[in-house]
Image 1 (cartoon, rainbow over the protein chains, first blue to last red):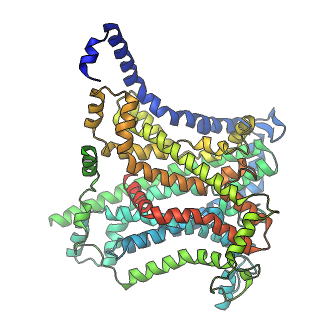
Image 2 (image 1 turned 180 degrees about the vertical axis):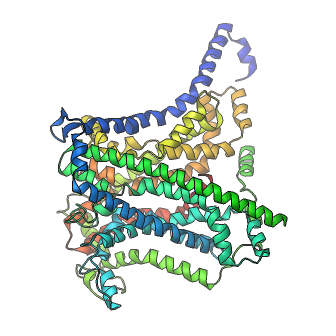
Length: 327
Length: 300
């Protein structure tokens, strides 16, 4: 399309083309970003609001919408012992997975941060479990942690220890489920920390070395404080995902009800039970909203808390670093 | 040519690497580091090895001791029994096919729509741009997964339960993808190229299609990989909305484990079948996955 052919065109046509072009420039950006917003409106925003609407009604899976009953569903849930057990289990599993995972991931990242031979091999090696489906992991671990025949208890007994009730008791069950989560995610998290470690300016370490700080001291006084922003990121993302945990507890036994006494019943499992086993969508929606609020509150709290800690400590570290370099 | 050269120039990582490798600060790996990592890898690999051992044995292997032995001879037979089982209500063949379709379509559409939106957010001028981008990022924190009840009601009304579309449609674009592509294109796509195309008379979409899309290829490939794996391993929503005929692999695997809970050699053969496709993918693309996680982490 050369300028000569344009000039030969009718003026009216050119004006028309300019008009088209004008709208093209104006509207295209909105058009390009619209798929996300349309989809979010349909599958994110609308369902969340609709969940609130459903939660205020009697609503069964077959009969559909029933009477408006105000906050009766919420009152039922909050007065139901199962909800509190599920809440306790969810937080217990979350803490048992998040805390060890972050510590172990930082250690692995520190090991990977050294000048290793065959770097890619080690990095890919720790990432391998990430591609295993949680369902597969859960089936395998539930058998490994079987109370009577599991290899974990065999191993413990070979060591002369008592077997643990991995399924019959709540805390061991939470531990086993947390282990499944960490099996899949620790390597992934380690790579995130590794990237953050490599972004730490190396002169901080030089300055510390000149001041006579050993490797352990350098790790705790430079590496750990510098990783705080990344820790916030990891904690917030794992909160959002971790509090919705479903696959692992669902497949920890073949019944999928979170244990005979709800030893490992989590909130999402509870939503599934209320909605699809009891066929009560109103109550399931009430729990969904409660969990939704908990997650948002928890993520926000995390962000505020850790940001406050991080900003004060990174400032002091940076200042200390500067002083050391200049001195 | 020149596009690629420019692209390459922009993609060269910031000098960080130059500062590394010297004596200063970087720990030299001792036997401690190697030993620790070796233990980590053994812990990561052992459950998988154990799984294969049981999948290649018979119904009694799981309770036999000692537990560190060689694989048995029955894996192929067990796998075939899972695949061709007349009593199992799900077919692993169709489950694998369903997983490929769902993950492939979702990955392709997320990449396309995210690149489109990322291009607009990073390179085009329009009113409310920053506010809208913040909104996209904020939705990352919204646990939309919890809205399964209304989503299920919607799918029932659309008569889409038991249809792969019920899993595909809610996933065709993601906030993570939009954010990822925006970040990448901000640095990887020079304005000059876009302007040059516009001056040459290319329409907005033509500019996107022939300039922006090709230059976003490296990030798009990584995004596709992550979305593919994420969709493949997804269980909660597919489990709710799909039936035996439309089951994806994780759903089929859950059904298998509920049907044969007394013969672990079959269940574990199913586990191996469900793992193998992503393992092969990992062997080919693991390097990109590592790179993607590390780059995403620095930016995010």
